[in-house]
Length: 173
Image 1 (cartoon, helix red, strand yellow):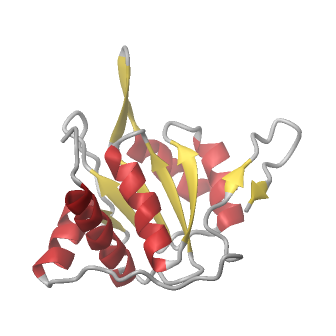
Image 2 (tube, one colour):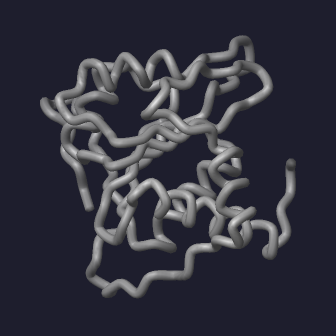
């Protein structure tokens, strides 16, 4: 869908936030977004903010070793991703890259949530991976919409990593 009304945006964010809560994400927890520039990336950032979780955007398509470094540093409870990213002349499957990164990383997220795009269907690992649409549909079917969590003005909102070209990437809060 290309455009969302304010009401639709709020519904998407509140349902995803409720689904994240159902996966155990709480205020102060970290969530990595390994996604292309699609509306769901914005939903993920706003859902984290809604429940007081700290998000870190790692651009989709990043190499597994670089993603693993950021996973080890941020120690996310959950990773939000998409099945693929689209470039002008190719489709990049994200899930195999994400799986490699998690295999390499010392820290293991409790859950991975994947938005399935029509160009590539990602294979989900039983017990860890969840289909984005399925978990938000479940939240909606139970009438779950996460309320906004009060946070202090000084509470962290996101972690942005430096490139790491001069050594280990540094997370800036």
